[in-house]
Length: 201
Image (cartoon, rainbow, N blue to C red; front, side, top):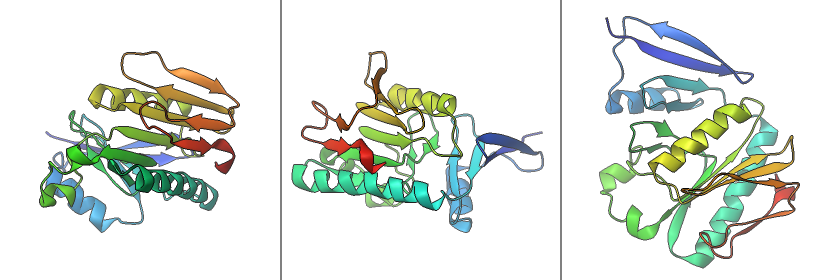
């Protein structure tokens, strides 16, 4: 018997719900499920587990907005790629569907996708991702997600931990770099001239 497993995120502790009568969702079915539940934040793991998360709290939403706004301003000036906010989902090479809090993709890679793929959970791993730890997250869980992004092709990743005043920087083939109480995060050399004042989160 095939089973679809839902992981319902609540206060950083996922509640696992098995639905034995439901076969694992196809990509189209998963997309339809997300469209039918627009108020929820939904991801899918590489093994097919569906993770259902409540909307972000207002304060976290504001902080995510600030991150996305700074990334947008930089992307407009840089002109070599496009940015995305937390509502964008991407299908990674391992089959997982993930929605970073903010992300950026080189224009030449994005332009290789058809319009149909761009309008779905695009089958591409962002070049740059930012994740902000919220009340619903755990540091361990987001570290694992950052490692997954690395395994699937990111060039640079930032994991921002406001509570502990640290930022974890991820780059391929390197151990994560941990910044203690930084005032500005610098994306150089991968995201040249992208400077983010940490006080905005």
